[in-house]
Image: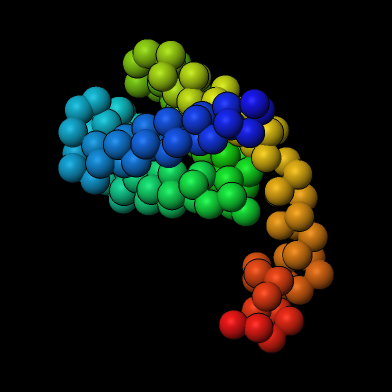
Length: 135
């Protein structure tokens, strides 16, 4: 049951982050005014959109879901702080996404540990069959 619940959270979060990225790339409100209030320009809004797309897509890849959730949780922590103290916007949505991302990261920590072991051992991310010479 835990696995199904995590997959449901991952799919919902992935879709949410992918939709949010569309707003970043198109300059839709409230994204445009929020990033204008930050004062870092359009490049930063686009960078956040790229992170949301990459993270949202990686949430759907079993080996990467935990790492993606950690990155997205960090992004949402920044969004909560920004909304609360810089732009004065509502913090509910980024706070919920922070909690959901944290739950996914925690729930997928076993896969994240395996990924880190592979990276530490091989210095790169690879699947076992390719490393053994099978295609």
